[in-house]
Length: 513
Image (cartoon, rainbow, N blue to C red; front, side, top):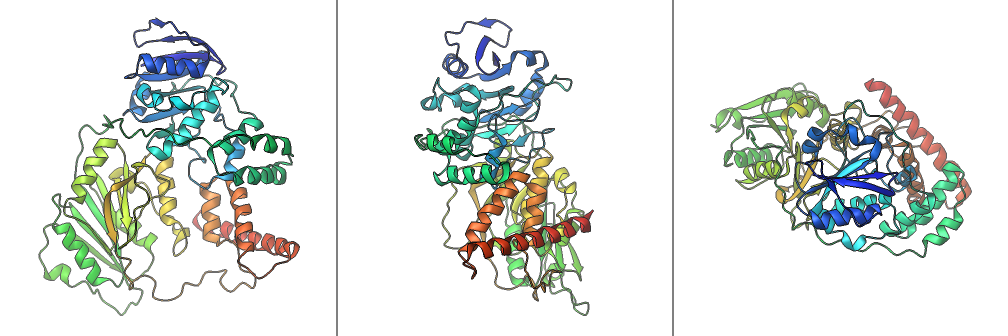
């Protein structure tokens, strides 16, 4: 490990190796010094650290966080990244509402303390510019690298008694430049509107200047840098399967047969069968009539809802890993074996596979950190699964699996998307809800916009600025699809529909408290 000690993200003080010996640097600019060290020590972890924080570096935490070569992580003592928080208007993803007590996936980087492997840093050498500050450069690497398979985090790298330092923040001009270089051009205009509408800041000059910047080119692939995590050196490959089902007897039978053919059999399969008609009995006779190579724990309940069914199933697990499965998927006999190989290779707590329908094309082809979570195609570490429940407020609504993923991230879990392992999703035409779901707001004369379950999810799992940005995007998109064409009348209508949604979202919040 090589430590680059700097002052205010600008002046290089010195660099030291793992033995504490001083390394002479030719470069005094921080970004240049990082590359100088990477060229000299491509097999080493390069750590940047504000000089006042050096005594608080925790090498045990650093070793734990950087458990393979493709990790980039930083930590801010005051909870600020270099890129201003106004960037949140533009992003509808889980990488902003960060739990800073744990390792949390995000491309937002701080100059306080952080690190990246030398070999990875060298792949971004084409982006080197001495005109760019250290903070801008680090965030640019993370923003470009994350979609390419760079694992980026906010992570506690310091001892618990660290002293806070004044955060180094980018300027509004840098914010506009960052947006122009890393997003589609229309987003600089959207940023201008948001800053004017929500922050009462008129930034026309910055917008005009940013038009002269060019979009950052795609970086050289980092896929050639191998990953072999040291986090799961010994991996217990025992797993339980949970499957909620409703009216899909034939499809479920095929799923159970696929598990029967696995090279790694489940410890047990937990099936929660739902039928709200109290006069009905189970339709899964084959569970008792046939012999299965694993135990099946079958529970028949007269209450519908995937959230409740999965929570019921989770409580019945006790294995080191839990496979969240659907009752209408199909998979090859070695899929579980390959999943565990990936879990070991990447050192993750959660893995979500590819989940394509028949004839659907694979769009995402890079193994990387994932924004979502698949409730029908994911492996989760057992203790995490058992300490995390699906939010009943989202029952029959939107985003219960996305919310579950957010809960896992807030506990420090990494959700890996593994496109090289695929389950076939049949999207069975039967099953599901037996009658239209009536919500408390279904009969309102003014329907809420968006759906209150969507609003509930946004308020719970995104920042205030993200909600505000989402509101503006939704208003623009919905205007094209509704019948009110007078913009002033539409604006008044949309405000009332939004307020209706907030009201019912708060009602859902109170329901689960």
